[in-house]
Length: 82
Image 1 (cartoon, rainbow, N blue to C red):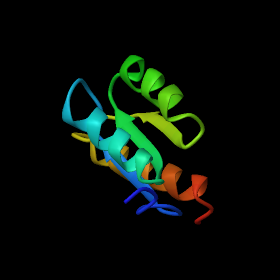
Image 2 (cartoon, rainbow, N blue to C red; image 1 turned 180 degrees about the vertical axis):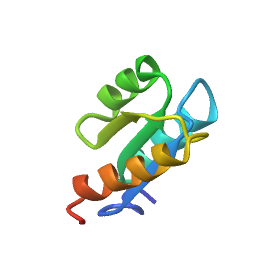
Image 3 (cartoon, helix red, strand yellow; image 1 turned 120 degrees about the horizontal axis):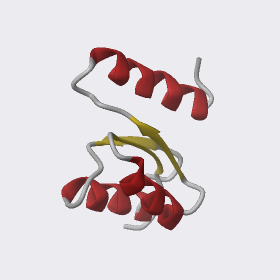
Image 4 (cartoon, rainbow, N blue to C red; image 1 turned 30 degrees about the horizontal axis):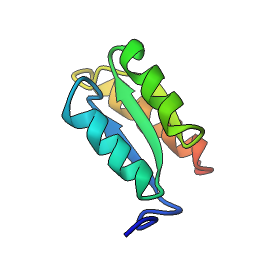
């Protein structure tokens, strides 16, 4: 089922040790471009390097409403939206 998500963008927030990292890896293996969001960039940076070119990351704390909106806007710009 490789490339099941080819041409799609997945926004994965809460990247930290565990589930978020594995979800991002799975989506990337299936061909999606990944937008990562987490409070700690030291967790996201190695993962973005691992996904190699198909990932973009933003420091974000989704407990703050403005952060969620900013993550969405930045992801939209990256994929060519408005």
